[in-house]
Length: 88
Image (cartoon, rainbow, N blue to C red; front, top):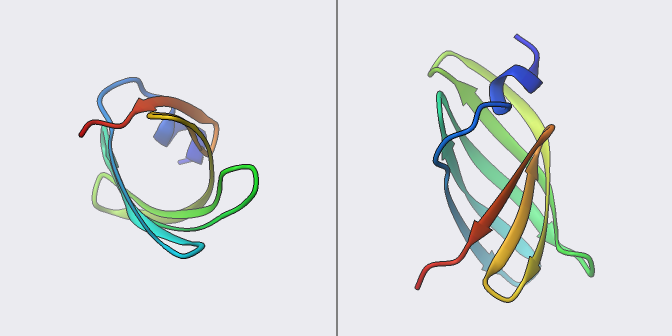
């Protein structure tokens, strides 16, 4: 199944990121998929990859990128764009 079919669905997404220096790790859980994020902080935001598992069976790596402004983040996984807000 092509990656665009995995991430093109709308629905709730839970994203957890932890930063240690320029290294970023985390998890991404959405409708029918979950993934582990490994990325770097850059001047423009965050760039890296997500090793995702679709429906608990098929695993593949997709690129991620994010830009942050205050408590808001535009996060892109493969061809999907998510507008996220940080909650305290």
